[in-house]
Length: 134
Image (cartoon, rainbow, N blue to C red; front, side):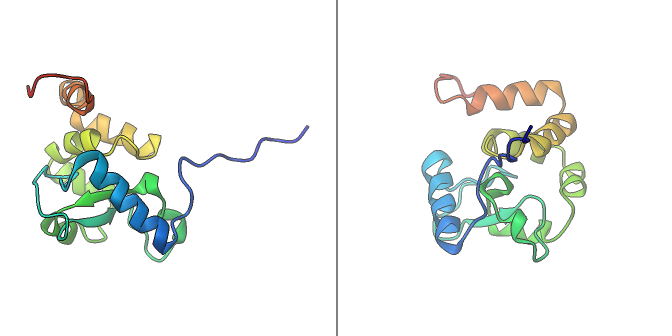
C-alpha cells in the first residue's frame, strides 16, 4: 500500500510567489507587524522567516513567513524562533493573531509561550466577525 504524499500547508516560494504571499498578508492584515502589532507603511513593511531560512528554500514557504516592521525584523535577524519569543512573550500572542497561517508546530509553540489567556484573546481578535477590540 502506498503512503500518501506529504502535504505541505504551502508550496516552496519562488520570487513571484514570495510577492504574492506578501500581498496576501497585506490584504489580510494590512501593514501590521506580526511581532509587535505596530502599523507601518506598506512600502516599508518587510517579510520575515519565522524559522530562519539560513539558505534553505524549504523555509521559504507561506507557512513560515509573516509581515514584520523593519525594527523587529532587524532585532530578530537569525535568532531562533523560541529565543526571540521568549525574550518578550507578548510577541507570541501577536504572532498568534497575525500568523494564523503558520505551520501547526510554530502555532503550538507560540500558544505555549503566550499562555492560555493571551492565546484565547489572540484567537478572538483574529476572528473577522468579533465586534470588540478587547
